[in-house]
Image 1 (cartoon, one colour):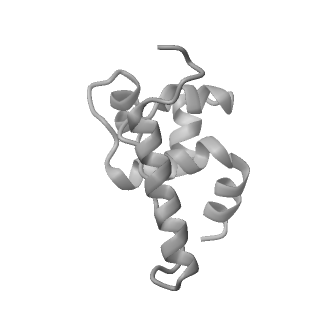
Image 2 (cartoon, rainbow, N blue to C red; image 1 turned 30 degrees about the vertical axis):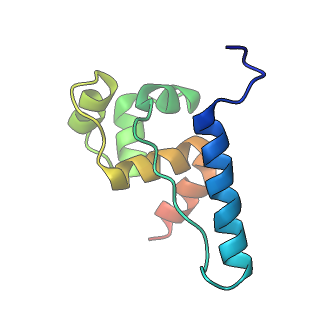
Length: 102
């Protein structure tokens, strides 16, 4: 199948998202829905910030051993860690600033 063609999963996801927007506009739902990635490439996030494992772990509050296990696919980060990692991937400076203030 061509990359230009939408498959049924993509279509169904769009329809679900539009329904969420309609519900929100009608006051049936407040805020937003968090979509947590099932898997996340921890090493690429760390390398994008040009950080060592020790620096990344210290900066974002992870243990080096957990980080090592995630990067070597021995373990998958828990849901809350995947949320934080997704935030780091998108806005690393914002996450650093917020963490430095708490």
